[in-house]
Image 1 (tube, rainbow, N blue to C red):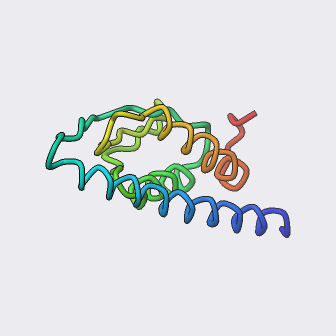
Image 2: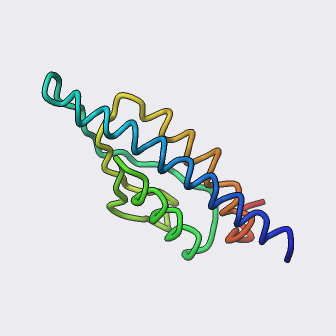
Length: 115
């Protein structure tokens, strides 16, 4: 119980860090848009096995991070469909989701498929 509470707190801190960093990046994209229009994209992102609650929380965290919006969550394929404001660094976005959000969510909301 204590471990999961600490993990949830760490996840919240990582999320807040991602919000601040993405906020600055989004501001830069907006300010640069007068000179150069950002390349927006729709991307599919696979996610680790977790419950519907975990996937919904992941989708919310992604949507609350500036510059990204979750359009759909496909539980059968374990994929998020995202709208990305600036697709110039989709690998960086995927890295944040996979490294900062997914491990804690799998521990908190994992399924038997997560092994």
